[in-house]
Length: 358
Length: 148
Image 1 (cartoon, rainbow over the protein chains, first blue to last red):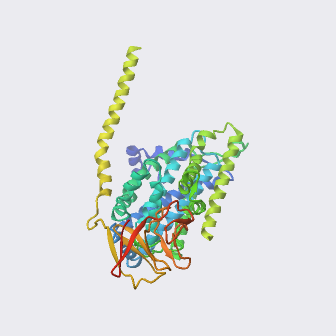
Image 2: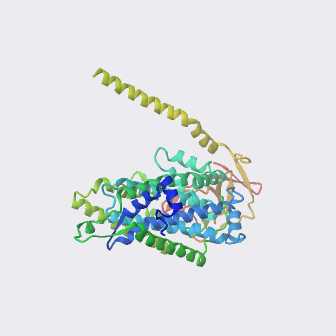
Image 3: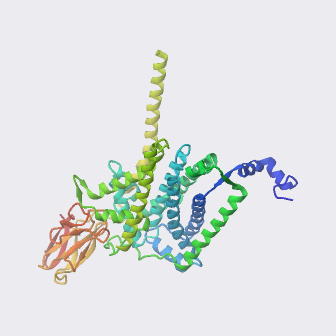
């Protein structure tokens, strides 16, 4: 007797009240195209699993973490050294966060190069960009919480950059900093943004993103659309089983990395000590960091870094508005976005590697 | 036509009132969040001058990062024996600067900005402005740093 058979009393009881068979039928109807680029379809699912790890380990960390200036660093040290498997939970949180950012980049660029942002998936694309922004905000706010030396300066630089936004920058930086200098006010505000506001935003936007993916089905690349023979597989159970295997692999991979390279904790932040020599941001900010170092103090009437930051904004904006411009009607425009994406990726990887070696 | 104009007007005025209401309703919450950033934290007071100990013990070439009010500051004694003090906040992106003994200049580790020790002028790297100077006096052998 199968689990979903009408002979199964519990199943039919549940089905009468919740309508489970409707969901299963919809899932069985959903098909996933099979082609050379199918591997990119797994990225969103991997991101989801990593986010689930973040949620779970985040809740566990809050059991011992104290968001108070004189206790924050020691409470993370306590988790790392005194609590059984504390190092494991804390390292999972830090490592999965970094791997998540990497997977999100891959997810975004695979969708970008497959032109998956075109009609009718524009809103799916925008919601994906919003999710990337939310994850960056998670990263920025979470980074400060252990209150170590590098966290302090990373926040200082980040808030200074935010403060340079024309008109509203000052107010935004003040609201986030919670005082004239980074201190208890900043920890309190970053903590509540990290554990309350961003998770709410994440649930809302990720819900929309997933709903739209279900509504439109998987995007098919041009080469597949033109193919004479198209092969599909069922989402349920065929694709989902493979999805599970990939998720399992990723969980094991992250756990393996964590066991081999547990995440460290720097010396406690001292707001009056100079920035330590050789200080560098996390890898995903390294390209921007390296680029900013090259800029002269003044370019024309503007301060170099303001122009540099505006330049990054424009670079990201082009990705954001791609669905409006590259609608598929013009081959030249389509080609432009291909080249743009390739240059963006080369530039990002190049500056990141340079930053690592420098 | 008249009915249409009236409808447009009513819609417009409703929109204006809705915006006014939204602004009014969110104002207390905005003030709640922003006013905490302007108030002094407990135990914090405005510092106008600070003593940094004996000038005889502070040899030429020596430097010290110290707390001046709520901000980081830097004291350097250059090779000619003169004292220089600055607000130690890099004018680029706000990192805390330090004295580079080897190169005899003030340096920021974050993005490699370099400043002149004697004047605080930005010499190299991305900083757009000089460091903000503080006054240094030696009174009866004691180094006193005060706001410029």
